[in-house]
Length: 255
Image (cartoon, rainbow, N blue to C red; front, side, top):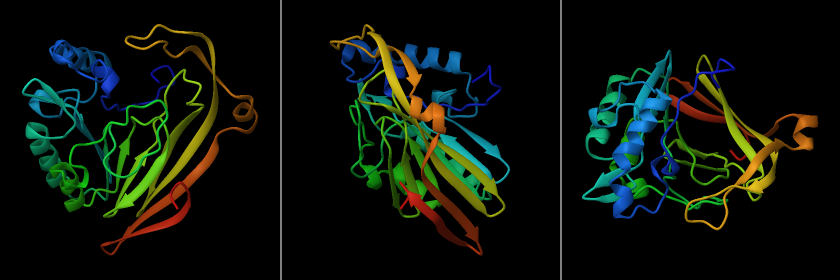
């Protein structure tokens, strides 16, 4: 990304924290995992004190993007939630940026619904739509939640919030696509386009902790995508005008 001059913003996932499950000996390492993540990724430092470089927000004109860490160690146990100090910070950021026309939140786990999965442990937010985190997104009219975890694509809408699970994996034959989302704001419209590249996993299997075999050594773009370019698998336009939100141009995964 740096070589191409592309700015990137990341959300911590379970593999950044040693991968689930989290027995006692691994729980003790979570602060070290988080410290290394923050030092190497160098994300904005405007998050809560206990999650600097892990949770943060970016404001660019009419767009607000909030990144959260969906993992919290509570009483020596890993919980899948946005809670405590981070939740209070999340609410404050939403309140202080209520003038942002478009609001997007990104985290790692799924929030609700039946989500397609490929080579995934399918981690979901505790309490789902009943969680304080979701209720705050609903209250402040968040437009989209971007998630990973499932290594597949599922798009669901509820309460005006689009849950867009579009993460991909690396080196697994079963995960043979790299799916990504392109967004553009123009005036009162946010346009989202889902894209897909077909991928071939090649080479030997790599070593993997606690698993019979890891991912393949190499990934290569499939001839189909090399010839035809990225495939569009869905489109959505979110229009905001006169205190109304409309969903237009819905195709593919967004239907």
